[in-house]
Image (cartoon, rainbow, N blue to C red):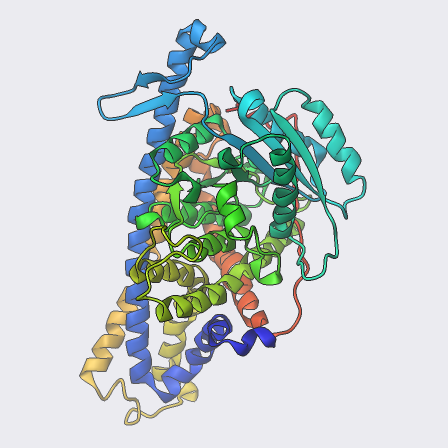
Length: 558
């Protein structure tokens, strides 16, 4: 209960508890105040969702533009054999009058941190093979294979993978994160923290320039295309301060999506769409998801990755840590290149559903970042008139309004899932039954004590609330309609998949699983994660189940 000593830590558990409590209590004891609350909540939710549709539309267009530019560049290189054999640094290809894509030798050394635990060896080799196929892998890429020492045979497995890619990278480092380190919570964050600290120290000892090391933290199943690294280099070159720039790409699920249940497929599609929408946030306040790039300088100056249980959402937590530790100076550069991931998959329909639920439970343990954000906001409010960086006195900082914007992004990410599912599905039907029962034996109030009936204003407001709820799902369907076209475009234009291997009109039936998927993989796990903040003890970290078939994964190594 020590963590509940701060008022900021009570927000997460109280969000679903209050949402559930007011479902029956609101109509029975304070119906007028309750209907005003529902009007404000649903109107705000509808506006927020419409805003997300607009931002997702912007992101989808930018992704398509990036892919078209890459395809034009690839076609140009293919047509000129001499460039294919010996690409010249700083060669520029004008794609159109407004955009220019630069193909040049990387300025930085890119270290790819691949945390893994008991992942199929073939999957890890496939992930690294995609990086090895990049033009500058041998001169500018370093692999940091972050193993867990608790995995039996980890050292031998790492050595086999290193030998498999001998001489194909500029460096290859294997770390074995020890288990049961005092104060550490097992997970991706603690593994990454150990790997970066040890591997980068060894790199610097061997002569690498710490100013030029950029880290890309990635999932073990992430298919990172060469275009992503090209866009990262361009973003860093455009940045006023590349060492305080965090690069965040969208996530995409297309590698095994046809092999998992529709509910799992639709959950990950919705998740990916939310991440894509987030990338079009203003002022560089985009939270990365799963895969991201940042400088070693930034990681070192903020004290690397936190390793306690409250930092289990390693991607969001590290972004928040960088943001607050630099007083808002660190910002995100969105990279509009999709990173293809695998859906959670295991043998058996119900086993697959359960595995995705377990993954959702783990994802929503990141609700701890809500308390972390609010605690830092309290500090920022107290120091709002003092504009100085926490690390460098001469470093430019952001205003308090930007910190409020960042806080709103985190509150939305964690409070909406834990409340919207209950209120959207149950608030109006339950209030209708309590205040306007279909049968006399269900009556709790008499007409004279029903305060909605006795007031024209509140009764009309209740009618408006009911009308608004009809429109609440429309933004989601708008987002998914945009996504359907985007998914087909990425599959066919970027991964060169044939039509039959992408989504088709037959996948319309997937949408029937949305209500179940929303409740099972969003509302329920987020509610449980919030309420468990009241309890002592932590859940065990469970790695998502994956099945990898090297013969059937025929994507282009892009």
